[in-house]
Length: 282
Image (cartoon, rainbow, N blue to C red; front, top):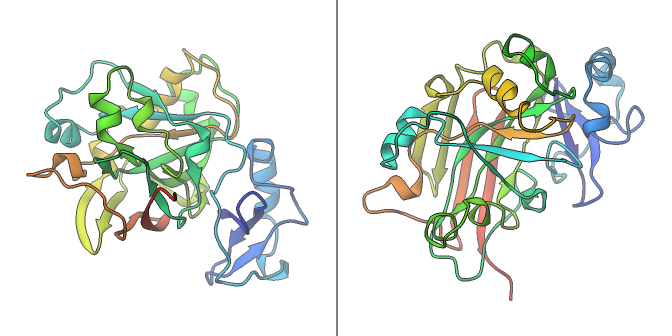
């Protein structure tokens, strides 16, 4: 299934995308697409529904983030060998962990705001993994049982805040609108191998990122097992698994986002995001 959330910001309703590309309203069957409704039993019940019997939604309706009420937004840094090379960094001996604040989350096609005093706002297309079952000290062999689905993430990053202002990466990662999620939460039955997906990103029609998840250093089962040693993973948590090469920081010379530009990004089988870049409103 391709599950989603639609409607005005803060008032999204759950839905799904049918085989003809029509958004269908799931409000009669669950209150939201959030951690309380991402277990395998709930997903199996939704899969039994006949989409044709669900109310159709206007195609122009805003799409919200594909998961509601995210508890933790966990990111993995330098997790593609070719991206580590372009940044001049060595592949880390263990996964690099950082957080994006949940206030950064927005819809897949919402505007991305360049924060005040920013000079180096950058892009990163990433595969998101959404947890559907609590995980604590999980064996790698059992890790995929805890996955509710996958989604596109744009890990928007302010590089000066992240790398040049001292401290951790987090303050360059969690600005408002720096975490578009969606358009869909795609259940695992539709993705035969999450480690063989093309992913790409364009700015104003120029393709900067064009990679494949096969170059991940640390793969999803390991990441879930690893993270579960340091924190409990809970249903509705999002893990953003790293980006392939082609980020703005890696260009010669570096290229960063400016107001008025448009980003288009996607992952094979998981849909596309489209974002207009704007300046921080005064």
